[in-house]
Image 1 (tube, rainbow, N blue to C red):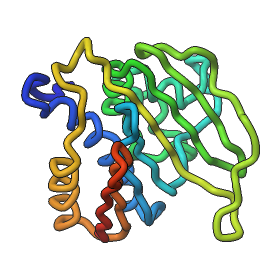
Image 2: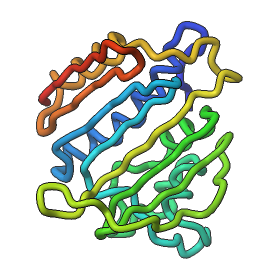
Image 3: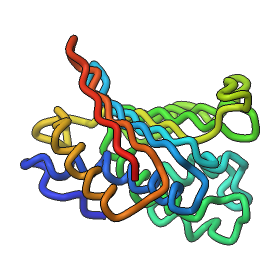
Length: 200
């Protein structure tokens, strides 16, 4: 997959775009009504939704979790598209590319009342997906959805600093084409926090 010219920042910002696109597709399917995009101190970014959560079961032919397949295999969706437990938007292409271009990537999946966690370094899992606890309660129900935090690898990007305004501009464009969710974009990198709330 082509992510754009890494020198002008388009490739870097496309990484966030890939994850946001997945979350918006989940919203368009009627399974998600909130998406959070956070630029963290330290240079990482987090994209979080309250959708169904990436499938966490073991893939029958791959022998690892569906989450790991999605995060490490291009066109992974073809491996499990017939599975009723697999959200249709999780093709695996964008997520796998984001992982490959990241120094580290952490995925937390809140599904079936449990919190699942996996961490990747340079695109490779440090350990298999594991249940780390019960999903915290949110509005009286177990939290659900997917949360991905990644740190861009300077080996692939000339500049790894995300531009808040550039991200907000792109999401506003998406907001004009779609409907069904609230997107909160937050910049936590300085003392003066910045936040934009968009309803799509």
